[in-house]
Image (cartoon, rainbow, N blue to C red; front, top):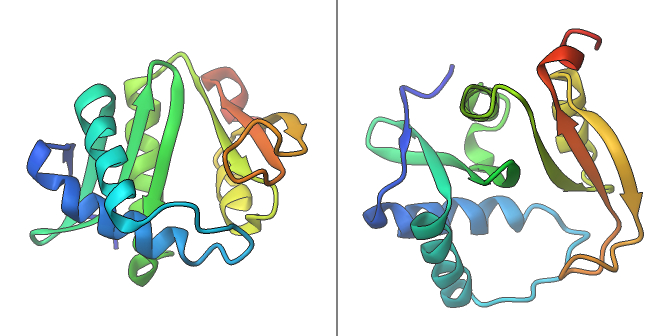
Length: 153
């Protein structure tokens, strides 16, 4: 069951976005917790103000969000309660519509579920790193989606 609505985020969505982020991020047990909920909320407030952010809603509840900074995807998080229900797919499709020529984004190498999700949807790996370039110091992988490669999966 897909979300009922995907729309641009507003300033008053920040608390709901922060809750989705915290709930989803906390399932990634291989990652260190580096920030307090208040620090995360303040960071996400800046993201909503400075980037293109969309939220997925069911009823009046935000159940996922995604963000783009230029042609770089910076966030795609879904509330764990609705994993596997089409929310992530709908958000990724929104990003594909917003960047029809393609975009790039990072994922953690150890996040096998996310990586399988992206690869099933035509995203290709470009680079694997040892994590020195991210705040968590955790190995990651750079992905790219381009319309000409999406059908090759």
